[in-house]
Length: 245
Image (cartoon, one colour):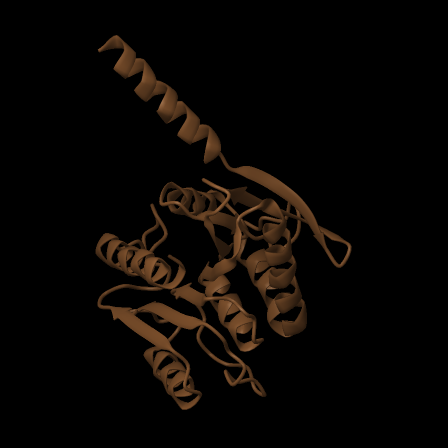
C-alpha cells in the first residue's frame, strides 16, 4: 500500500510539473510583449487566448490553466505591451481604442503571438483562437483576415463588422456565445452577424444565454452568471473536442 501511495504521489507531481505555465517575453514589430504559455504535452493542440480590455490578467491565466488540465496547450497573448495592464476605464478605452482604429496592427499582434506560440513545441496543425469581450472582437477581426486555423470562439465579445470588411475570406468554424441581457453588445448586432455569416457560407454556431449580461463569465464580478458560464464553457470544450481532436 505504501508503494502504491508513493507512486501516485510521484505521478501527480510529474503531471503538475509538465503543466506548469510560464510568462513568455516576445516581440512583434520590434515592440516587447509578455504572454503566458502552458503546455501539458508536446502533441497538445493549441489554443490562442485573447484577453479582455484590461489586458492579460489572472483571469486569462486561470482560463489557460483550466484548458491545460484538459490536455490543451494555451498561449495567452498580450495585445497591449509588456507591463501594460490598465486598471482605469479611461486607460482601458485608450488601449482598445488604439487597436480598433488600427485593425492591421491588431491582426499583426495576433499573428505575432501565434507565431511565438508555434515555436513552443505544441501541435501547430490544430489551432483554435478564442477571446473574451475585447478579445472576442479581436478574434472576429482575425477570422475576417483569412487566418488559417481550425476555429474561432468568442465569449461576450464585440460582434459588429467594420465598414469595408466582411467574412468572405474566413476559414475555420465560428462559435459565438453571447448574453441576451447584454446592453453593450445588442441582439441586433448578434442577428446582424448571423446574417453575415450565413450570407458568406461560414460554418458557425451562435448561442445566447437568457438573463446573462456583458462579461457574464468573469468570476467574482457583479455580472458573473454561473449558469451561463458553465453552459458556455461546456459548449466551448465540446467544440474543442469536435474541432481539434
